[in-house]
Structures are given as structure tokens and as C-alpha cells.
Image (cartoon, rainbow, N blue to C red; front, side):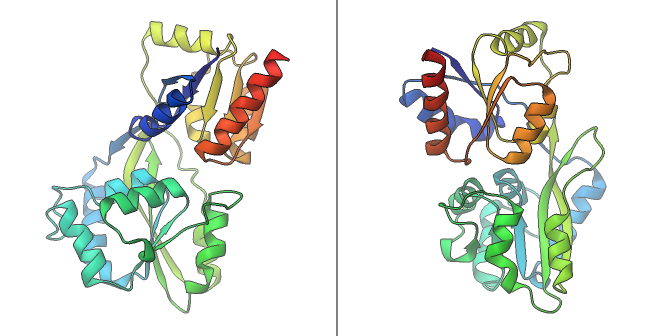
Length: 274
């Protein structure tokens, strides 16, 4: 039976591993992105300033579940906000008109786990064809009126030029809104031992199926590894295109839900055994 290589960050991989293993698959975690807190004083000051000006924002947009967790991280002096629960209470009770935007159901689940009520969250439907900024915009664009202010909470790729897509910010500005981008966590490439690198090379040759949910994760795959026999399932067309450019032999695209990814795995396994 082929291995399933779950490449999500470690804190996001656990539920995928459990469900896939419960289905009888041999699933292993191989995070291709490490999530870390921001470290610079400038970042810390920007975050504190955002909390101090929280009431001036009409919406908070979270690009990922990591952004949600980092924004509400406990034990940080966000303008007098000493704990995650205090921060959540501030959002929920003191500023009930602030909307919370999420690009996908994983981010929605993260916000809900933090204590944000469902009626405060805007996100693409669970049945949406895709979970990304474009799908979110279809849901929230009518909220932008005049000088509506949106705080976009995102990550930074360490060691790389900031190539983050500004598409959503451009849409907000086109309607007269004012977007502000704030980095609340960092994404880093993993550091592997020679043994781990050798294992990855084997998984690229032995029919294992790589589950790819980020173009950045794919870029963190060492260039020395030959992917020309690799098989992958990608949760967005942009990721699929990057996988093809990286040289993967078989590239499938799936909606980013466990149910749809499981269906794609079944299809690939049936094809290989035919």
C-alpha cells in the first residue's frame, strides 16, 4: 500500500493523519513548512499597534488557521491584552460589529475553537468549489462601503522575497476600502538530516502519494530531490501548476477537504492497480 505524505505544518497535520489512518491508509507527517512566531521588534510593535487601534477596523481577515492562532496568542502584551481569552472577549463583546473573515473551513474551525461565535465569521461555503481569497471575496465584498478598514493577518516566508498575492487588498481598495497587512507569524523551510532527505527521495520513487496544500511548501522541497516519478494531490490549481513545474509525474487536483482528498486517493490507487 502506498504511503500518504501529509505535508501540512505540524499543528495542522494531526487531524488529517488521524482520519486517513482510520480509513486504513499508511499516512506519515512530513511538514514542508515550519510555523514560527515573529521575532523582530518592528513586528511586535506593529501587532501591539493593531490591537490598540482594533476598534477602527471593520473586519479582520485571516489567511490561515496559523494566522488566527498567532493573532490571539496568549501572554503577549497587545496594548494591555494579557491573554488569548482576554483578546477573544475583547473581539466578541467590546467590538461586536467587527467581522472575521476566513479563506477556508480550516481557518473557520480554528476561530471557532478559540471561542469566536459562528455568526461573526464570514467564509466560503463548505460546499464551495475552492477555498481562497477569490471565493472569500464573493462572500464579503458587499461589506466594503466607503472607507471600510480591513486588517489582513498573514505570514511571512523567511529568507524569500515577499511574493504574497495582493489580490484581495486590491479588490478592497477598488471599492474604496482601506486594507492593512500585518505579519503575525513566519513560515520557514524545514531542516532535514541526511536520513530524512534519503527517505523523501525514496517516497518520490516508490509510488507514495504526496498531499500538497501550499505552493510555498512545494518550494521548500529540496531542489536536489528528483520528483520525476512523484505522485501528488494538490488542493488548488496554483499548487498543481507549481507541482508540474517542479517535475511531478502525476498531478491531481482536489478540493481541500478530507472527503475530496480521500476520493482522489482512492481514484489514484484504483488506477495504479488496474
